[in-house]
Length: 350
Picture 1 (cartoon, rainbow, N blue to C red):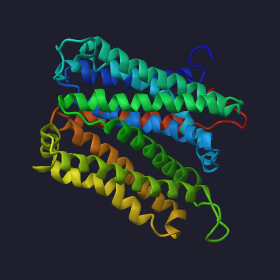
Picture 2 (picture 1 turned 180 degrees about the horizontal axis):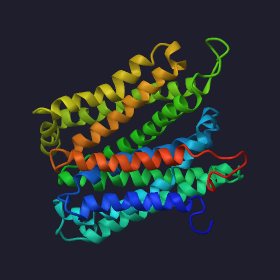
Picture 3 (picture 1 turned 120 degrees about the vertical axis):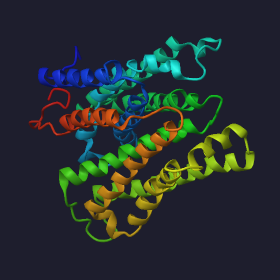
Picture 4 (picture 1 turned 90 degrees about the horizontal axis):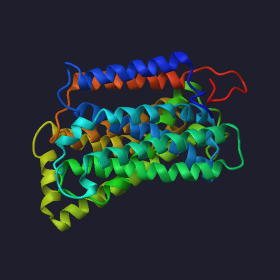
């Protein structure tokens, strides 16, 4: 485990080049704010950590469907290191948080950057070690899966509380941490559906209506998590309604009282719940890779739109810069997933 054995020289150059392009948008002539990079990191950190979390959860419960996309889901773990480095680019942006300058170590800018960077780095190290153990079928891979899931929950919770909630200080929402890591795991399952559709196309026969296939299992998970998500959604806004807390109400009104945020807020409910729930409700649709692909894409769009709605009333997001950041991440993601490996070759040595 010396250095980065999974990274060839060519891929390291591409990662450095992508990081340089992002740096130019943050510190070069185009630089004006960090809202675009914050949105990109919120989305991609959720998706990438969710990919590894999906495999870790399936390892603990010995789920069979993950074998179809396990290698691809684990192969994206180097992007967690990329996210960790890019988070440091947000250091100047931290000055725009409303709590900066307050007394106390928790409100110290250096501690804010340090604790979140350490958690992102721990997520990468835990994901890397779990990927190694999983590929080699080590006896202790369940232990490494549990360690990763613990770090994953902590990392996503801190993203919710530190990156998002503290932007609207003194707004407080104790459900937001759980909301974030559930959505991240949801994103991991959605990526599984997309990867399955690309890699395997038509599913294997299920041998009758009561049979199973990997695609059907993925579809059932997406269907179930859409119900879980809408339950969390209802629980969150039920508290706002009966509590009538001024900070909660003002936070909500800022996002539903004017266009286009009002329409985008409503679309989140459609992307996360109505689309996957209704198109996956028929039994036959659960074995159709195109339907599962559409449901998975809807979920990922929901995550992106939701993260934008969180930030838009508070920090400016420049769509041109955001497109550059997304393109960099997408190219690196595809590069890691699409690598062809010889039989028996390590996922960390390709």
